Length: 581
Image (tube, rainbow, N blue to C red; front, side, top):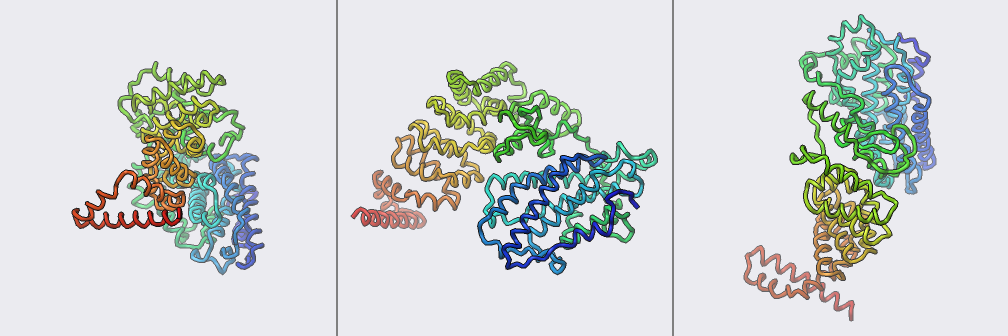
């Protein structure tokens, strides 16, 4: 048995199963349960400040950091003003079936398991590692708790609680981390890495046996998914504190099978150096950028972190002096070299083969221009953004390099500049950069849409035209149509369609056409008065005559559509005349 100050097999297991039954019709009890859940999250987050020791130090720190990011989620659930009483929060033994246990109950069980796990594994002594399989059980415990926590987060009714988009994105980020972590725990290579610095010499001789041990993520899901939420946490908790027995279902998972032994070669992949992993996603970095604290992150993840309203460094918790993301070309080069030496694919944003031998002088010029975008001098800012506009118009290569240099977030900030010329150049630069498809994601991550909509509302005509064209370009991605529609852009585009210049009307029409492909935006356009505007425009353009000819002489399909359109136009004209009368 394990000698540890927190080792109490009976009481610890019972503490997880002993919960308070709350009547479903008592809203006060439901609110109290949510507040208790928030306290649990904060308690786990505080564990990281006390520090961890032993071979599972990093695992415990990562677990606490991920749980800490959930505090905003539970604060919004706590502050939800709707009716919470219909929610099934009964966590008693009579509700052990996974079909009757609510998502919040499932999340509570997962978090309690996480708390017990970091409490034990965080102070696990290297000397406790022996041949009894305790360390393997702890690794398996991390995998199960991580998987269960991700599953519980996936099942939360976010729409029910009116969770904000920013918090949803933050939860999505945590779920990505949890998925990656669960998959990582499933690889035998991670177990060997955990044990390598602490295993005794005799155990090292048996590494071939350990190398055959593999925890398959899908196997865990099939095993764990068939039992209740409470029993999952209880079973893995018992596995951590008691040696596995031959009849235990868990021990079967821990035994190497023939299939596992045959898949050893698959797990002989090189271990990625920690410096090459993003601290947020725990994935190989493809686009490294440095924040003001000196830490390096994957650009898309740290940008999303900042967009969620965070102003601290995720790793050091230090306040960011500024939000500028500086490309880390040295690390990018080292990662590329390592990938080539180890035959590892390394997808980067620099996918264009023409950029492999790009002139370093051009890179230096672009970097200098991007730095000037943040200048305190209005003249230098204006000159820099003008250069960016010119360069981004010339070629796809330039659009890639400018984005790689970190210009997009700075340009987004300049969209709302008090200087009209700078504002116009910034909007046009974003438009030019959005022509390259991969840049659209970076523009959306930089939260550009609200600024573009503001320009569409108050900017000069040429700037509004370019803003409309930018929204059209961004809306080419289906996931962006909903975001743009919800931003309040559609009424402004309808206004530009009615009152803009010839080019402005064309830009507004193409943007509206694309946005209305998404069903939810059609109602927004109708409420904004697009029907009256379109009827007026079609009438002025003399569309009635060719439609009537098509209705008489076209194909059957053309006749049907022409007649439908004529009917709509006539009814709309009658309604407008009735309103005017």
